[in-house]
Length: 295
Image (cartoon, rainbow, N blue to C red; front, side):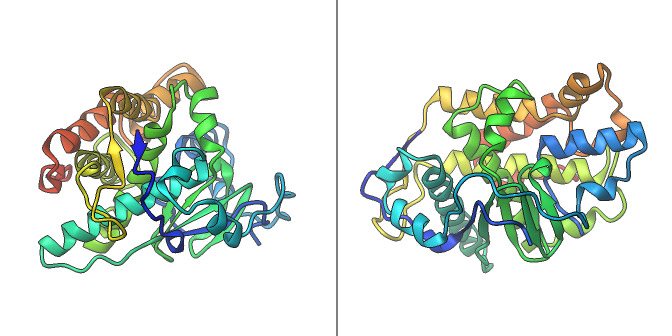
């Protein structure tokens, strides 16, 4: 994946709370959150402990970084080609540019969502979350939350090959949840939160499909700053890495690694094959109408 070196990045779309202690419902919690929930179900731990805590926030990791520093470091596509945090910012810009145009073409208004970069723990409108939850979207404040260390964990703990576009898939998936929230799809989950055929699984698979739809258009969506696409090159290998990432966070793969067995009755995100299938459906079609996982 290659970004246009001259493209101007919009840092207003990302808040940087890394190194700052973090002092409801989180949709799309990452694989580590699934492992935590699985542990809760198997070992009798209160699942609520994974969403909030009365314990003091853990000390920040590394040096605190302000949004002003992100502004200074991440100015152009060239920066995105060099730095992981700038790359995440660039993907957010690209994803939101696509959805803004898609909504406009359908006669709807797209409300942008900020992303928040954090370490250890973060306070949200959905409660306090730790890095163990993985990337997630909070409908309460319409923000997506990312601890960039999760992308290393995808390789170490989940066996994903990783890479820039695997990271981009995760970002695009969380923004798929923002699209669902804007369209009212999120409300369809209700209490149907577990099981291979649950509304929760259908919501997650649709977000995978929406990520694929964005990927289809990533190299053709013009950016306001240049009139050119922010992403200038996307290879078959990039797509293969995204598919590998989708497979690695399937409920069956995670359960097998954690316990040696699978239990579809506790699934919340879908199987590895399903996640790969729905990302592919979105990528090949480029049409969000093809992402009707509920139908």
